[in-house]
Image (cartoon, rainbow, N blue to C red; front, side, top):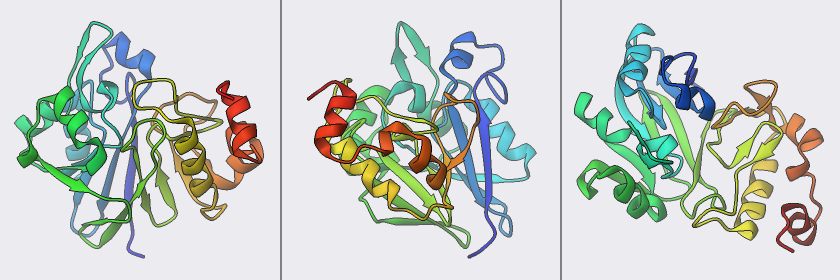
Length: 236
């Protein structure tokens, strides 16, 4: 596989440093690119979009696209808890790129961001995107939202709000589905143990993990059946 540039940026530390809400939400934004072509895409740009763009440029990369894990405003922009969060609409003002979103998430993303069909590439699970020679595989992982997706780049998994270090995404918000989340987590658990996990939030004692470590220590991956999982989530 080609060399991969993958940079993990933390809200409140690497960008949006003066925004206490961004720091409290602890979103991760990711840059994924090809060191040969110096092109990259950004995953879930929000809170301080110019700061994210500058981070890409300071790393020596040109932004050529955006990927959305799901449509919640802390990941793509919009209104949340009385706050107005910058996101994809601001990115398209700064850089006229396309946004890759799962087809089941497109309507929600348009609703919260104000983007149009022409701004989006509506993808399906199993689709791939190339950035230079780097291949990004899109995995449909419903449960947190109907069109949640993760991105697999070689042995690196950018998991959004599907799988966290020692946790998983909520299933009690609109569009959440406990059974779908269970199935999605089972699919992620089937990835090789050395797959590196890059979550959507900094909610644990470390910013990254591996699928093997999560299978051993993450209670949400240890459920032996759907019934066990539902009891764990309090929905049995």
